[in-house]
Length: 153
Image (cartoon, rainbow, N blue to C red):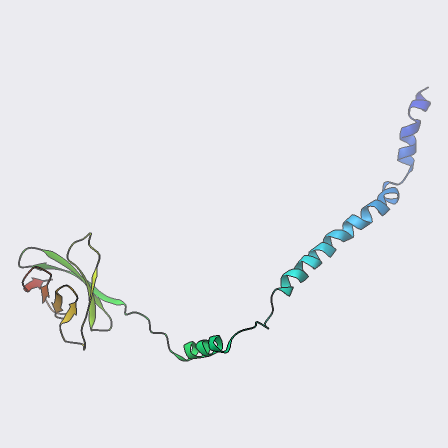
């Protein structure tokens, strides 16, 4: 009786597991690499150097490649100046020596001032003017609604 109950298990143990299941596993093992190869081929098919373009776009690309890119000037000095009316003005002196950014209030956005040539007074729309250099102990600043005044670093 015990032999009859274990007969099914003995038969399963007698068979080799890999021999019986090898045909079933073989297709699934080759499907994954094949699918990956097809996916890679499809992705690369979209990468083509033969892009149709117009002559105008090619001419624009050629002119942009020839023109040098000019970077904005960097800040060479950042100074705080106290003016005659007890106001504090922040000045960021820029490396081109003909422009600066000033802030008349800590929370206000900076105003960009420019001069035609280095050494000349820098101006901006609205009545802003700045005379001086970063190495000067005092500068002359004009802000909208106020007269020009001397400000010390």
